[in-house]
Length: 126
Image (cartoon, rainbow, N blue to C red; front, side, top):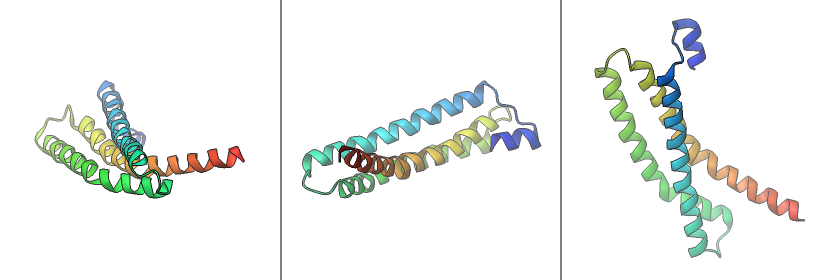
């Protein structure tokens, strides 16, 4: 997105953009750790369930937390975008895009990757 904005609107990738990317990466990693930690807890508690069921339950249980955290951040960023100055506008825009994509990836991408990894490890052992 920012490469297109840079080409058509002259948006520069500067230190604020790099800061936004690093912030979003840490946010996404933290959210993924929360999901994986819940999977670990549920696996100890409900080890008799299928692995996919444990992952599904973990995602459902952490979904509310992830959405609430993301909405809080999005509302704050929207206020800063609308009321802030021009200097930080693209920084805040990058954070908005990153918050939405980070929430999606930590919830809906990390868990299926874990399932695929588990299936591959069982296949490789055979």
